[in-house]
Length: 371
Ligand SMILES: Cc1cc2nc3c(=O)[nH]c(=O)nc-3n(C[C@H](O)[C@H](O)[C@H](O)COP(=O)(O)OP(=O)(O)OC[C@H]3O[C@@H](n4cnc5c(N)ncnc54)[C@H](O)[C@@H]3O)c2cc1C
Image (cartoon, rainbow, N blue to C red):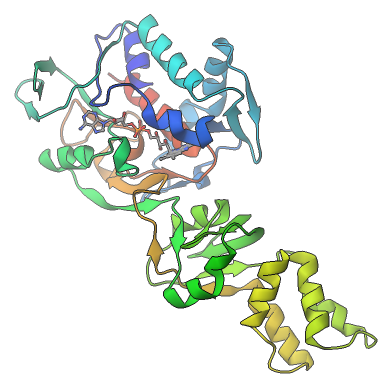
């Protein structure tokens, strides 16, 4: 996106990519259909140590601008849920669109180009094994640490450090959480069971599906909250949003016993989860206070994850180049004129739902328009 914007403005642009093709992450994104943006993009959808940093770029390159580009290329798409836009056919459409825009803007793309060294004299000199590039401006768009097998490297962070820029220590985000051996032995054999929950921690909450896995918890609600979770905090899970199980027991004709309780739980939760959860949360008695206590527990079930599934499974890397180091308008380093950082390598991380691409497009366009 940065190369396209700069190329359109008549700049001579070279894209240096160490992989054998462009946009590998785009290709695997959104289950192969690329959730390329979100209709309801707000500043609250981004985490950063400076919550205002993304505002300017995102306001100037809105989802509507990207959608117009998608439509110009005749790419069919649909809204899946919660404003999330996906390709009807394949994420390949988005990569082909970006490649076509690069060609039209006269951008030269160098694949299989592993960068060995970057130096700054009166210009930036970038050395690869078989080529040397020299330019007055250098834009770092090397992403985060997620999915190392796709070629993710700490290169961007190393380069920032080399030029004296500070880094907010990265951590895996939008990532499944693992359970302790004890919790795992209670619940992990229910792998595949999913239910709508509200997952909360550190003042954030997400109402979406939770999925039990062989190692712990996943699904959109858990992926979202994982970005905020810090070990050893617990996350709270409301297993039954909007439901009051014990309401039925106000009727004196309803017997207060395990069978009735199980039946009530099974009305709301998947049967296996209902039964299992009750196995480990038997009410201490059938009094009103004991039932009220159970009600409280089901709406705020504390789970202390053992950890996360790490960068191998994380959809993004949170943290990154400290936003204090960059201009929010252009993404240029305040200390090193001509050096820009865009996309995931910056300490701006989107929620699940197309926000990470929206940040990549918006920050790329911001830099491209300033080059
Ligand atoms: C499985 C998965 C699914 C996802 N689905 C979605 C989704 O549907 N919607 C969404 O908004 N976000 C999604 N994301 C997140 C999204 O893909 C990223 O946030 C986004 O791609 C970041 O863009 P970027 O250009 O900053 O970095 P990247 O897309 O990671 O691109 C960085 C590029 O730099 C190259 N590179 C790295 N190091 C070097 C080096 N040393 N030399 C040369 N080149 C280098 C890499 O090969 C890569 O091509 C998903 C991520 C994953 C892992």
